[in-house]
Length: 317
Image 1 (tube, rainbow, N blue to C red):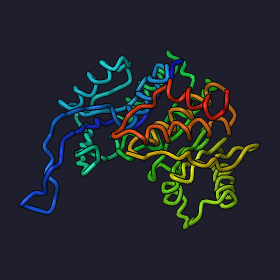
Image 2 (cartoon, rainbow, N blue to C red):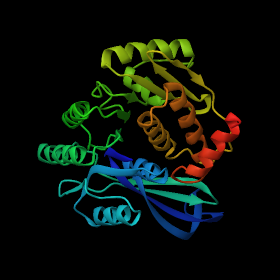
Image 3 (cartoon, rainbow, N blue to C red):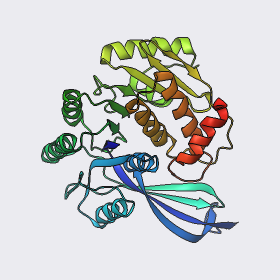
């Protein structure tokens, strides 16, 4: 199954080590580094999740014309994923998020990035490249992975959604605040509770089914969106469509790290939609997948076999 992921990509870098003492210079732990590692992050982590589940993801994004950008493209190619849609620009700096892990706990994150909007020229190139891939590869689903780093803007979003509609391709969105209201006519809109509060400027305190249904209905009608999936952290997920709605509670997990869980949820939800799952089924399996990756340290993709076994265990089939 061909899929297409458009949005902000980055490198997730890790410094793994051991902590045995506190620094004499400041009240901070001293990490004795034992391992360094780099992984595809942001929209690229969505692609990694899709790839782990057997799909062929085409990433459409813009990286800097720098060493980090070249290393990022090489990392994607070595992972067995195509790099056809990844553009380079001298106006960008490739985003790197460096996480310092001591004794299997994240102690600090250092971000190196430029989050300015794409230039008009770069936006036009990205639209042209993405539309060409859509027409050539005919993806089963198109995913917008928005990290507010400048790759996605109103012009890019509207052009790609319009092209998807021409080919009857479902579109799914993992949004952030800046473009929250630019995703009209999409198939699935998947904010977390914090993003929903910020985007709608609401003081929603308790995520009850009644309160969420009112917000979801009004937003879906206004934005012409078919369905919503709202992740509620320890409360599970809320799903909404014209004929289905409700909250699915979270499964009890030994949470180690929530980094990247949203990427996993949108990946699994998108494949479920492409496969014709109902809204409730899509929400249930996505909720399960998000919980599973939280049991591992760092940003990691879902294990397809583990997810399948967990589905079988919980469904009794």
